[in-house]
Length: 387
Image 1 (cartoon, rainbow, N blue to C red):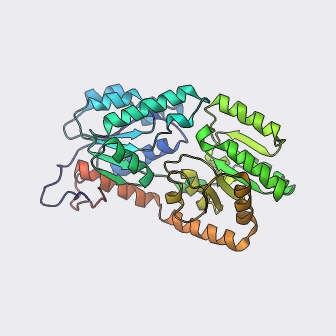
Image 2 (cartoon, rainbow, N blue to C red):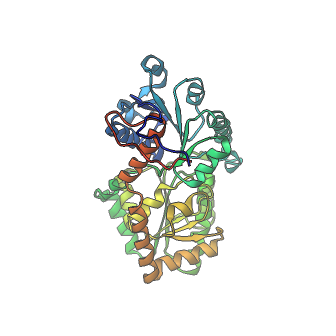
């Protein structure tokens, strides 16, 4: 474990600014939300901080500065933080900059997980892995939101790393649910049947096709009126079309609802109506929706893949494989065993309490300070768990 800077001045001199760089700042996106919340934490700590983006969602145009403007704004002592989750020209730009670099890594879905469904995304993924290999040895520090992601950083050549949970504002789900969505979900429940929920991009690695198989088995064995709600953006048209065809072939067109991207208020309605949150994703770098489900008192059944086990922290039913009958049996227990359900919900609340926004923001600031020095005007030195 590398030492944090000490009061004797052996650590780095204080930086005046800690700026973030992103390929794209996207609304209602886990990495985008993390970036905005980290900027707030950096500013509150005392650093100047801007977000430099290659592209920005229309809703967030006021939040960013174009990447190409940074050289004219650069100042001695700047520290740069790169939010890494995909390939981008920003990586090459930062590789040529002299400022200390912090690599904030959110994982990359490996090319083989796209298969033949999305060759363009597979190519971008391969390019991202090449860029990770380019930047990791240069980085003064690699931040990972899970031990799973930290292992990628170490393998890519990062010399110093720290695990800092992703910054997420779970309280946004406390707002009143969208009344129209809530009314529609209540109407569905009036006819009986359990509601399964999964939140995430509709892509092969999230394995929505395995969820469809599992709900088919669940309806055959336990609950013929059960429904599956798949909430999230649909970037892969080919996978979406095939999934819809698969749903129709299994006679589940009325039981499987593919919603696309939804507002926070609508998302709150889906969590409020869910009887179980079910994830069969084969590759998760963290899994923010797992925290959202636990915060919403929804029991979680999940395939143990990637960072899922660490994110759940024992507060869910973990599965070793996605066999439909096994998944159906596990969900049946979570839905129909009151004692088990109560234990899962209570454990979920305890796990969420360990992932507060304030606590994660403090850890992020402490980690950044091992590179940037103490924030201006702060006498106490951070003690980040940097390896």
